[in-house]
Image (cartoon, rainbow, N blue to C red; front, side):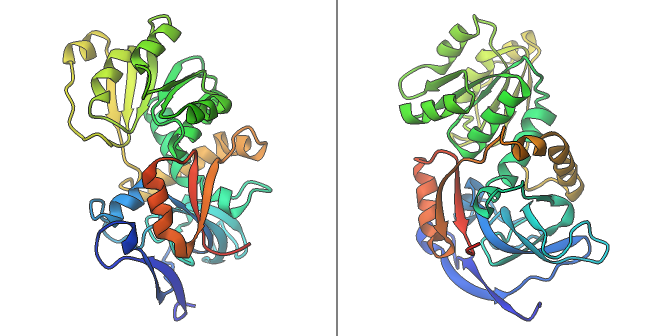
Amino acid sequence: MATLEMRYVNFISPGGPEVLTLGRMLRPTPGPGEILIEVYAAGVNRPDIFQRMGTYPAPPGASPVLGLEVAGIVVEAAPDSKWKIGDRVCALTPGGGYAEYCITPEDHALPIPNGMSFEMAAGIPETYFTVWANVFQLGNLKPGETFLVHGGASGIGTTAIQMAHAWGARVFTTAGTPMKCEACRALGAEIAVNYREQDFVDEIKIATMGSGIDVILDMIAGQYTPKNIDLLAYKGRLVQISFQQGSEASVNLAKVMQKRLTITGSTMRSRSIDEKAEIADELLREIWPLLQNGTLKVIVDRTFSLEQAGEAHRYLEQSDHIGKVILQVKSS
């Protein structure tokens, strides 16, 4: 099998979406503890864009091919693997998802929920792993607490809103258009603030009667950071997962100390194999039943073919989407 070729998305040098082209390479060969997946669909995420632009290189040992999440069928696994050839899985990958075949540690794969398409399943791993690790592990969100996620119409946002709502939290979010705000409310957000027209700090303080927010999940940073700190409740937690407005911010440490705040954050790709496996185990136990029974849904905005990877990146960069952008690699 290792001698066979496959199609994949290639780029010779960093640049805009136009640098993405189709190429051919040998199928990867799984090592100990890994499985080979025939990819039917792959998720498109902002880290893919950063890698294409040359600002987010693949970590040592990972495939240089773009793509951090896939859904497909196991075609190669060790005899003692938990997976069998023919199993339908979705998986977090260290890279290599924009291709017809992809390898990943077997413990980073999860069964596709019953009746779910490959295209929808490909939108699960990156967002669900990220939200679980940051909101529930680091942020320690509890039922009855208040939760704010910025960018509620994004893949992360639509996932976080649903998971926090299902957990029993009061959910607040920000989004950039009335249509996006309405979509967020339909997913479980109590308040969706159009940040282009309203001040989210004022609106949420009114909604919480001045008590503020217990956990904030933020990917904006920059000028949002002091606003987040102002909005946090006593013993509130700010969890940072990206910094679209820049990684540096002005922080009033007096407020941090007076309110006993926790400021933390993480990235997913740099975590160890064991850490990601732990997240997968917890998702299977705590979240998978909610995907199986339809309480949680994967919101797919648009699907592109593998040949249209550049168009998919361009579309994601425009930030007009609600939910996930997916590459269909093979028809099911």
